Amino acid sequence: MAFEGLTERLQNAIAKLRRKGKISENDVKEVMREIRLALLEADVNFKVVKDFVKQVRTRAVGSEVLESLTPAQQIVKIVNEELIKVMGDEAVPLNHSKKIPTIIMMVGLQGAGKTTTASKLAAKLKRENKARPLMIAADVYRPAAIEQLKILGKENDIPVFEMGTDVSPVEIVRQGLAQATANKNDYVFIDTAGRLQIDEKLMAELAQIEELAQPDEILLTVDAMTGQNAVEVAQGFNDQLNITGVVLTKLDGDTRGGAALSIRAVTGKPIKFIGQGEKMDDLDVFYPDRMASRILG
Ligand code: GDP
Image (cartoon, rainbow, N blue to C red; front, top):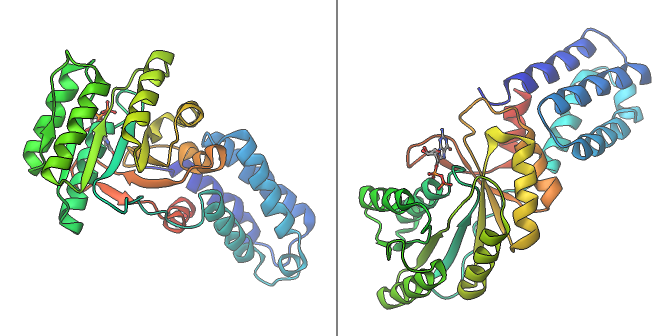
């Protein structure tokens, strides 16, 4: 289960305080030491941990906690609020263009979940907004990726624009956008190529697609299971493209929490959606407060 270790350690750290009546500064120090270790073990970025612990400690040694008759509850409240803050406070909605189509470009490493997420999101918009999306298959390096997008498109009754693997991705996007305009599609998803790691040639190509398509949204898809590595990848993409939001996938797995808690603080970009399974309706809006509750258990 996601966050299992983190939840358990945070709960244990705070449980020790529950046994005491009033607490001292030393007790705060002790609990903060344990919270710090719990976060590091969950693979949270060290700078994020440092700032988080400092923030909580400053508030926790305040008189309203030290003089409280329920100090453990006060600390839980502070930790909860700071978790929400570090994940961005509020849910951030998908960007929408004033005139159709809204263009959403999907980027991320191979296997992160771009193709699946594009289809999930297109299906969600179709279901909830009666949208008429078009998906463009611009991953010419893996024929299987085009095939996968076509299968998902067919299953969900969403048209897919493709030109096989012999045309440049930029050209495919150009023609795909022209088709979307002609067909009055209100959303366009551009499924781009990924690699096993960030590589300059790919980045240059993605930048060209961005330049041409001027997307309203560039959604970076990262695999929550990869922890700090997901954060580094996010930083790498964010340095070279105008990322507007992040999708954190595979939160149905036993991820430790590092990616969820670090990405916003490190990149400054909001997590907009979370993937929680392979099925089409396993995509949810990311709410920092719900995630904090989930982490605290
Ligand atoms: P891409 O290479 O970035 O396009 O990645 P894919 O969309 O092909 O996804 C790679 C694998 O991850 C596929 O088997 C997906 O079914 C799976 N996947 C994607 N999102 C999730 C998720 O939220 N949870 C789980 N369990 N699997 C996912």
